[in-house]
View 1 (cartoon, rainbow, N blue to C red):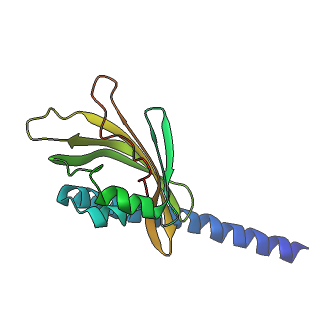
View 2 (cartoon, rainbow, N blue to C red):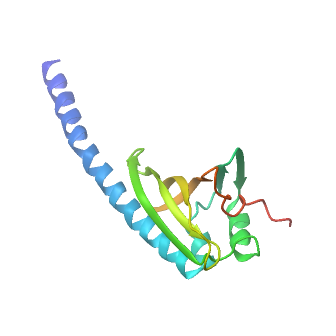
Length: 161
């Protein structure tokens, strides 16, 4: 019994030290993901943007709405006229909260400027990134503009097929 207990304690100690390392790994991966996400938006790379989402689909929430789109619907959304390339885009004040070794919640703000000369306003952002097939992907996003500002482009609606 004593040996089993000692082995259990040793295993728990190893797991406890491994958890912070796994959390640091997923945070570093999420930081790189968000840097790439910004570049993809700034380039107006429609296929690249769709590729950032979970292949089993994603939830889009915010402004009192919730929609789930399948991955093919996400691809169609970003290929179509519902999405337009911003004149300017930048993340700010991003925070990362590990939700396990294969998931991280990202919270922060972004600036989206539709047209040159528009006044930028902050939009709050929360995203859930999950590891699928070894790669982080977006599973859920909440984008909400300040009530004093006009909202960003509307939440995606499933394309009519």
